[in-house]
Length: 386
Image 1 (tube, helix red, strand yellow):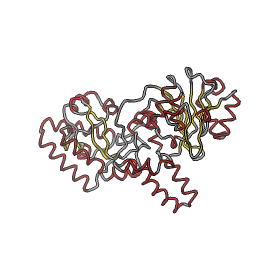
Image 2: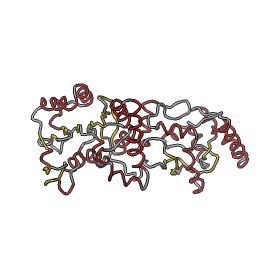
Image 3: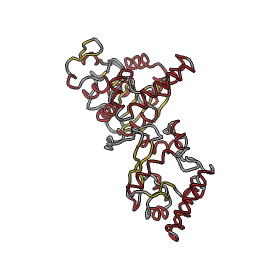
Image 4: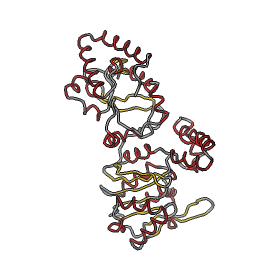
């Protein structure tokens, strides 16, 4: 419980049971603790802090009347925890903005620890898109976009650039994190939750998640401009493929969720993929995101022309005979579908079959021919990066 109080209300860990300074006032941790005497108290508190629409959203995912004695409810100024049995917590409703929590992953991990399997967590935040709308509503459309652009550079770009990221907590922390929808959902999955639902209400994104597992131990989730992605390499060995990040941070943990939500598009990529940033779409069209794969070529993990490096999820969806054949070779920076101009889902699979047949007959000449065809298709705009 102390861990949860610490990461929700930003209490100094060494002072959790004593006093701490907030602004110019000295407060005790007990100032942040209250209790709900009845289900009606919980109803009134939820209505008071968020309104009827949010209250009904909570009801869709949680039986409040049945579980109110086993629910932790937190607001920006209080946590209703005094009568909660911490050995039998069924749900956590946190209405303190996630933006204002300094260490988001540590907060999600403390929630994960408190909840049992299938425990429900409901939270809220202002995404950077809702932030843009707020700026435009307040300053007007034109001036609001200018202020938002400056804010975007300070709050979204600087924190991800070394060593400039060290300036962010020193200069800009008081206004909180600026987070995308994809990043917050990805962080939830990274920390052991599955996404049940999310919805924008009153300028805030609300989410409902369910604990399904322990947090991941991956020490390097995507965050900085150049990222590594786990891809199937030669002999089925997983390799780290370098790319310029075009998705929001932590998006890699949402792949299964996005595929279940929308399926694949005609070129075999997840359809309606909200993980891809708007600027990322431009970078992809210009093929710029593929440039760091040269590092993989230098390391010997990949070659210039070859089968497409794909995730384990996508690999398992390929026909068995193609799975067996394709892991005999290193993946390539330029995949066969670019040379054969077969970018749709079924087409790029067939393009690999054709390439592998040609490769078996003429190992070296095939790569030269495919390279020339790919360069021609890109230069004449016959094919675009997805």
